[in-house]
Amino acid sequence: MNGFSTGEEDSRGPTEQICCLIDNSERCSKVAGNASYSKRIQKTVTQRKLNLLLDNNAHHFYICDFHKMIIQCARTKRRRKDSEEDSNETDTDVPEVDLYHLQVNTLRRYKRHYKVPTRPGLNKAQLADNIMKHFKTIPVKEKDVLTYFIYTIKTNGNKLDQKNGINTNDNM
Image (cartoon, rainbow, N blue to C red; front, top):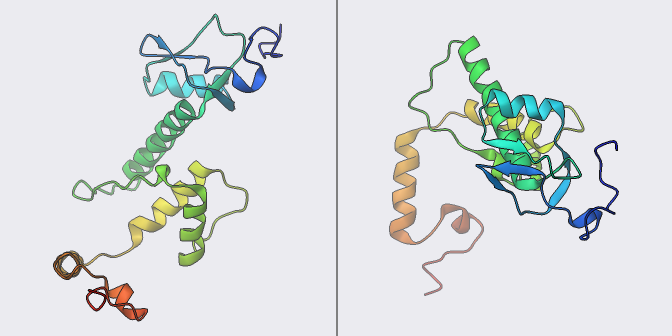
């Protein structure tokens, strides 16, 4: 057997197989996607000390989207930390914004709006990495942001709504 399921071994069929991973000593019960548990992914899991194991009783190597995202985030976070150490930057007071949970369309809209240069054909994790680099370069005046935030909360409004001719206070 080549390690891939033909769907005959599992009564659920090839599209409804469950994830082949054991997460913290429990077999994952989520539906497997089209991502497979390759040697490269296994190496990432080992290096990052994720509590994931391949279930030897599984007749396939397909993992669910949940575990796929965990592995992708672990891989990209390691790469970011390495690059920060290489450039001797210390941003301990800057909170990390997790863009990996955003939808691909949202990331693409951000990229288009800010004209972030990327090569074509990037997957979600690579696109999020490029956008994260750009996002960290945007200067923020904390005093102005906090003042505007407090103003917005107190007036139940938004300057963007007022610019478009909609004033939330006039509608009451």
